[in-house]
Structures are given as C-alpha cells and as structure tokens.
Image 1: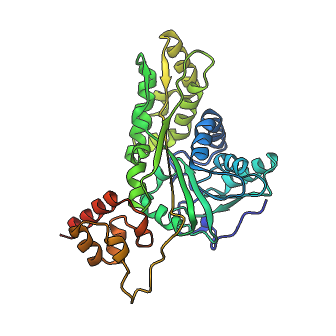
Image 2: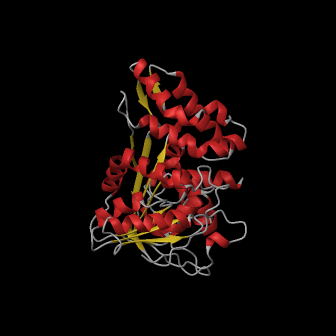
Image 3: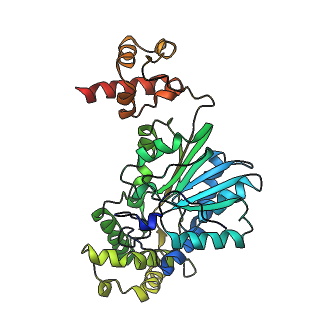
Amino acid sequence: MRRIPLGPDPMQMSGGKTGNSDDYALGYSKREFQRLQLQSTFIRDLTEDVLKRAGLKPGMHVLDLGCGVGDVSLIAGELVGPTGTVLGVDRSAAGLALAEQRAAEAGQSSRVRFAAAELDTFVPQESYDAVIGRLILMYLPNPATVLRRLCDHLRPGGIVAFQELAMSAARSIPEIPQFVQCTRWINDTFDRINVETDMGHKLFATFLAAGLPGPQMIMAGRAEGGAQSVAYDYVAETLRSLLPTMERVGVTSAADVGIDTLAERLRAEAVAHAACVMPPPFIGAWARLPERRFASKDPATPRDTDARAASLSPAAKKILRSLSDEQLKDAGIDPSLIHSYPEVELEARLMSALMSLR
C-alpha cells in the first residue's frame, strides 16, 4: 500500500508535531500502538454504531482524520465496501506503516489508503462523502476551524461524524481508590498539557462553531466487572503510555504508579469490592451538510440574502444584511450554507455575532 504524498514530509517539517513523542502525550512506541489496538477491540462496537447511525454506506468515499494505526479506517472500510474508499490521515509515519499492514491483512488495501500529514493544516486534495474521526478533536487547539476547513471538501449532503471522550464521567460503584487515583492521574496530565478531556461534551458547540447544523448525538461506554474484564488492562496500558508525560509535567512518578503490577492491582481491588468499573464513556456526534450548497458570490457582489431574510424577525434580518462573510464565519455561520440553518438557530447566531462586535 502506497503512502500518498501531501507536499513536504511532515516528519521533517521544522517545528511540526508529526511523529514526535514529545508532542503527543501517549507517544508513538510499539507498546502504544498495541494499546490502540486493545482500545479498538474494547470499543469497536461503540464506534461502528456511531458510523452506522451517521449514515456510512457502500460506495462512499470517506476521510478519517487522525487514523492512528487504522482502527476506525478499517471499520469504515467494511461499511463502504469494495465500491467505496477510505483515506486515513495521521501524524505518525510509524503508525501509518502498521495501519497499512493491517489493511493488507484485512483484505482492504485496495480501498483503504493512508497519508502522513499535520492535522492542524491538512487540506484534502479531493472531495469526500464523509469526514470522520475518533479521539482526535481533543488534541487540536482549534477543532472547529479544522472541521470548517474539511467541510469545504465534502460533497453536498456529506456526513461529519466524530466520537470523543467524556473523561469526567469515569467512575466505579462502589468507589475503589486505585481506579479513582488512575483516572485522576490521567485527567490531571491531560489538563496540564491543554488536551480537552471533555471534548465529547463539547461536540455540539464545536459543530455549531464550525458552521454545521446541530448534530445528533449519543453517549455509550463499557460497564465492566469481574476478574476476566480487560478494563483493567485498558486503564493500565493508557497509564503506561502516558507515564513519561506524567513525570515530565510533575503529576506523579513511575515509583508511585508501579506500572508493571497496576492492571493486577486494579483487578484485585475491583473483584474484592464486587465493583462495577466504568472507564470514560464516548460521545458520538454526526450531522449532514444540505443536499444543495449555496456557493458565495464574487466578493465584489453583495450576497443575495433576501430569500433567507424573509423568514427572519426584523432585527435578525437587519443583522444578516449588515454582516460581512468574514463576520458571519467568526460567529460560526457558513455563508454558503445560510439557507440551511433552522430559523431559531440562525437568529441566535446572528444576535451573538452582533454582541461580539460591540
């Protein structure tokens, strides 16, 4: 499987984040790639459910943002079938090499491809029917900006579907100290390096800020117990990958974590208390672009807003006609999709835009 060139190799870009373990909290080790595969097995059905609800179907052409070792790309590849295609994009060349190998082993190499690129600035070279991702928006400093840019490369009626964590919702019943400590270490570490730990809860607002319709959403997670659960390994391996960053930012030390025995200690504690352990749940959100997209006119020509303004209140109508395209975009309104917003939502956004200018 050939990696698709996208300009300069991101691994060699000055100041870039691609493939640098210092820039990705969980690193790019072989053990981390194994953890990603464990995670995929643990939550595969949750992700597949979101993609099916979003409307992925045979024959679609899909972009998977932040594909890692290819787990979500391969699920999408199954859903689009041999008449569809998937392009997985990620920063890590090593991760992509493993993704290519796994796609070949799954018999999907003819329809699932991979590209190395810096996610913050990646610009697709073709149009897609869907853009998807799992656990990627939480790492981006401006996720709405990235989504807005990618939507420019979606076909009319295209799908946007993402699944992110709600890390503050992790818990156990009864509360068991070791599990509580592990979740606290993980959350504190991500907080200190400015990773959004509750991106799942912010998906609705992020979609709106990107100029998308309000998404449909669902929350799902694993509720685990007993000695046979893999939840303890899932938590422990996450901590193993995160440990160098935890020490670097001063959250805890390797001696305090005791990583080599952590999974068994978590298991013993849960079994002793007959506990139900609930790792952070996942929130999926999806929306469709309108079937018809209204392209903006030449900048020198005033926008034709009469048809849309006719249904608005006098105040909202006045605001709509007074704002420039750039001001609308700053308010999370895509001028090319102005006809697709529900009336109440559009009026609220217009009022917000006006207040921000005062």
